[in-house]
Length: 267
Image (cartoon, rainbow, N blue to C red; front, side, top):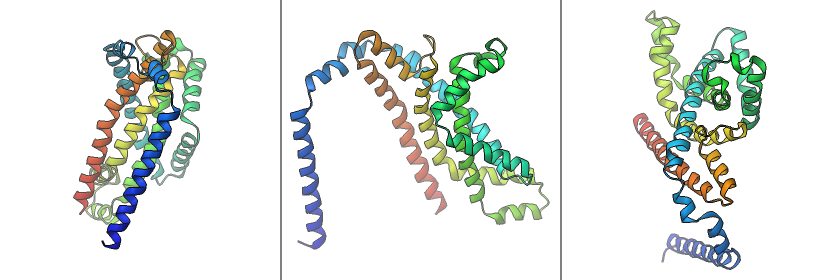
């Protein structure tokens, strides 16, 4: 047996031994019956469907789309501001990014969600912004915009400088160069991190629960928590967890596939 084979055999032995220790410990210490009764009651689980899909999962996807779309627009504008030759624009963009990346997302949601109606009056706010979930989506977009701005800026800086100089030598204006040459290549480079940010943002929509929403506007976490409190059982939270997995796992696999394709195209 070679040294590598012995090392592999030892690693497998340690792994199996560790799994056995964990399994025995959990089997002897965890009260599985009580856990199953509070978290895995089939009747309570099945009763969540189809409502948890038609309302909670749907709203989660809607809030994610609004927050991510708004964050992508904000992030693109701020990234361009940080690349600007105008000093005030660079300063404003940098301050925005630093503030919203430094503040916890939950605190931002609370400030915007409660502060917006107070500042302007709920009756004066347009459309969905007068609703708690709308103000919450705006807060999520502001937070996402700060992170996406840095991702987009990194993508812009990754584009070879020679291509920009070649476009300028052909007489192409700066704005047209950015739109037709720089940004398409930048977004191709940053597509994997953009997809990962989408997955993170989807889970961050659970923070909107702190604002309180009406029936029909609940996302997955609010649905699970509300029903769990009403029936005195945590099984609805497990149903919400299953829905999150059903949404996020395909997105995670998509992000990995996009990353592999992007790396293959660069070779």
